[in-house]
Image (cartoon, rainbow, N blue to C red; front, side, top):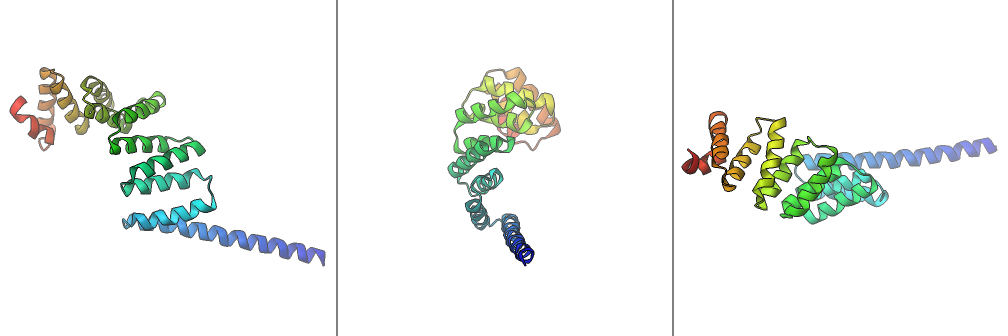
Length: 203
């Protein structure tokens, strides 16, 4: 008799766990479907429900951060990227923080966070680009040039890096180098906005 009660008890526990897991799977699957249809707010609601049930889950926080970013709620996104990183340090969370700082125009914070990432991942092109852009927007053209040259050493046909290198060199009064980058873009990517904007000065 006791064995039957034990087995029944175990069966109930297993059934409850299975239902709970199914509900979790449904919520996270729904969040991806809603994100794909650009219903970011509803997707965020699904993830918030999951987070309530597991407050220490780093991935849930990471996804909440991402959905807030898509909703242009950059401060909320930054907060959740930081929470996720605190639970479980990850490159995803670090890069998310950089993206938030750039989106908010917090150029110094963006450069500091990017520089921290680059200590471990010195050839991470996306972060080098963000660091270069933040430096450019801060009008620190010398530093921007350093970051963009590092990108081009890895990816010589990054036209984004070429364009900002062109502009940085021009504003840093290095006209020969700016003209060199202009000619490169004119040859390989004449539709570049930098070709249009600097044609009167370098063409």
